[in-house]
Length: 254
View (spheres, rainbow, N blue to C red):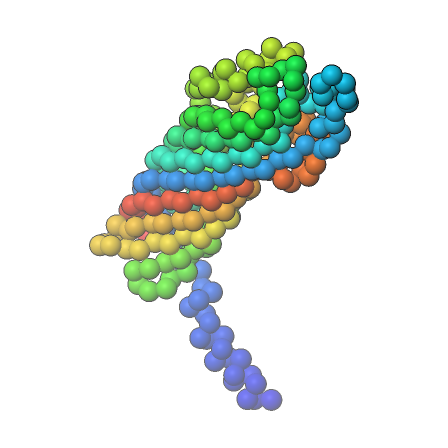
């Protein structure tokens, strides 16, 4: 009976430094941020259905989808910018300004009576966003100068400015078909769930280099929810992707 108990005590003592609560500290800093997001959305077949005749005539359901500018789409968003963070040991809050380039490939049905909407098209858009994130974290000491920490939290993305000229033209073309397109906030604003890992490497004194890699997926916005019934698989219409942050920080307490 004594040997198992002694073994348990030895294991617990050896594990204590790993699971002990880290000392509380406050720090702040900033650096560069890079993201890449992608999304694939396929319409239900009933919204891609055509009747015969002298030319392919869309059914009532297909016309409804067309009026709302809904097609099979593939989006790739690449962006970069700057961010600042404030860290309180178990939580990190940050604010970022990001410049995004969106490449959207649209599979448009062949409609002989609307030649400007035939075939597959790729549209390039630019927009600026502000990111506000709150991430929970738990740091582990690997060495005296190196820490790693898992991350989990939310990231709110808020579009600023107006649509770029290419998007204005494309939206105007769709609006002329009888649909009132959403404003920039309804179209681009989003809330993401994020998880990942980060590391702090102390360079000298309280100055450290911070790196973070996050994966996330977008929660449906009001606009996404209203359009959800059009898509073959709702989850396929949800954007997901990676986020990379690299910056310098300074621990000023703890």
